[in-house]
Length: 260
Image 1 (tube, helix red, strand yellow):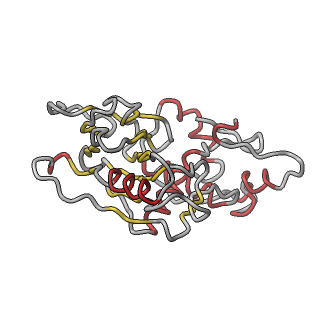
Image 2 (cartoon, one colour):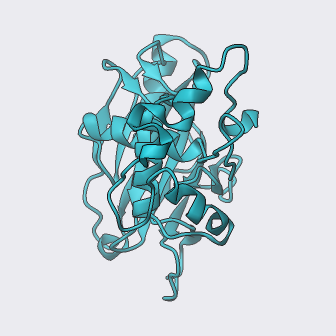
Image 3 (cartoon, one colour):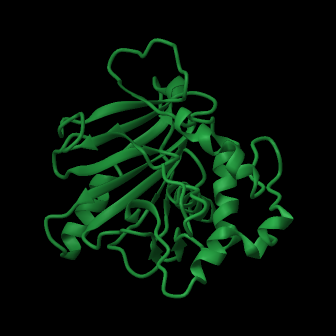
């Protein structure tokens, strides 16, 4: 993960992006272990970084803190899904659907928390994740943009299921929350909100080996595991944090994510 904004700090932009999308879902009563979806093709209200205008989107935010979660993908019959599951740092865990492990045959993916050691039951595709919170980005593919094909892709997409492993014998109905008519803002803010989002990820997730080099650096801007976010005075207060300063550097672009 990258730690470089304004050539000084690099809280991984992907973590705030994930956290902001997660918050957008929560505002739509999405929460964890349920789907936020868009019941029609996307328009300006979907304020994510790289949406496509030619698919029906479904996005669950998954929390495995209490137990593994099952993501069930239907077989590619009458429709198909292309998608992936990523961890909280937006690192790919596995692809699902036609281009994924099940290759269009459908399957029950078992998303596992860090350090999970129990045996995986037969009939599941194990997906060990490095973070407790993950998410899936699923596209229900269209044959065309006609209203009939959009409706068919929506119906097919809502055949996905999400439920705790402990309830696999009698899964409860999957909850779907439609975000088509509201502004879903998952854009990265180049002010203190960026660091607040990063802090939420640091507090919620275990340190990965690759992250440990940044522990002391993050302390200098007030991000420390187990403690409230407290920007240091030498950082110029809440509005003087590096991302805010970087944006104001005339003529010098602020690079994030895959741009780095």
